[in-house]
Length: 213
Image 1 (spheres, rainbow, N blue to C red):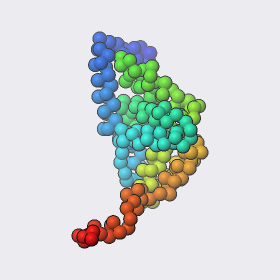
Image 2 (cartoon, one colour):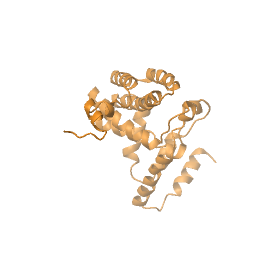
Image 3 (spheres, one colour):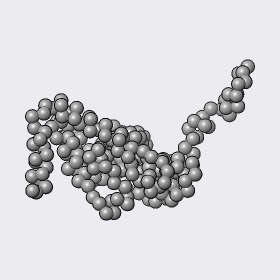
């Protein structure tokens, strides 16, 4: 049986299911990303994350980068949001696994979208991201790496010295000037500063049972 016939047989099984049912199928599948771990952390030794968590912050990062770069924030965020959707079927391939294995990412995404009526709107995001020709695609690729760098900085702050080596390896992957600047800031900023340094120091000092007066 050829690849084409296997694909055809798979999609034949979806015939007869109404579009709304297929969209429900698709949304159940998207939920699998919450159960799909990012596998690189087993090599780092600390930290954990699922693909849904990664995709959410990557989309937010992409939006911020596009604002900085004067690109289309909504399109960039959508590129980020769907960039790992195929992993509901393929699982996450970390950098070590990619050295020895490959996955049919496009085919997995096409199968996930079959019968939903969403193929023509979602698949082009994936194709644009893979070509990396548009500014938005480059920013989305950078957002993917910056999310990793943010996680690595947290692990470095918590005492995993190896995370620093991973950050050094990730920084050269950045493609845009905005991405490089944000990645450097992420790598240099303590992951607790946003809340610990937010209030005036006196706020922390007074929260030991003393009255405000």
